[in-house]
Amino acid sequence: RMEKLELDIEGMTCSACSSRIQKVLSRTEGVNEASINLATEAGVVEYDPSEVTVDDIIARVKKLGYGAAVKR
Ligand code: 9UX
Image (cartoon, rainbow, N blue to C red; front, top):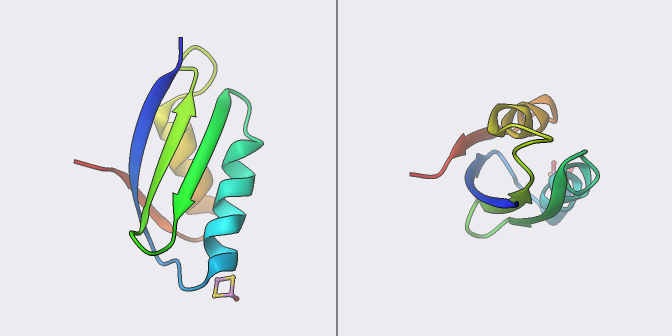
């Protein structure tokens, strides 16, 4: 069963930034779909919690050099 994760993302300054994050997350094991929005500095990730954790997803984004946190 898929879960939906909403993220706040910091540090994206051009459309290549959002594309890069989206591409990496989309290719991450357990992620079904990722949509990253530059203008709103946010992202939505559909993932299978039995395959990947929220912490894993956030760590992926941070490794690319951006700030990431669960939207609250
Ligand atoms: Mo262009 Mo976005 O260098 O980092 S990809 S600003």
